[in-house]
Image (tube, rainbow, N blue to C red):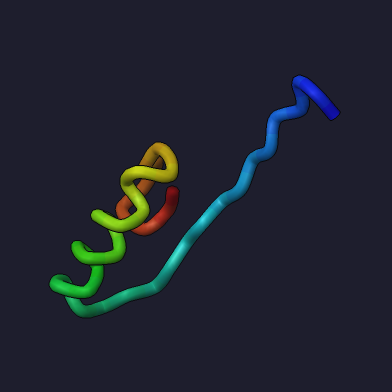
Length: 39
């Protein structure tokens, strides 16, 4: 329906700092980061 808002929560558990940064960069264009591993 027109005007509906879709909310999606993406979370991940990545222990490797390099991989975490890479995923965060990829997700940055899709939403607002609310926690270190949640967009």
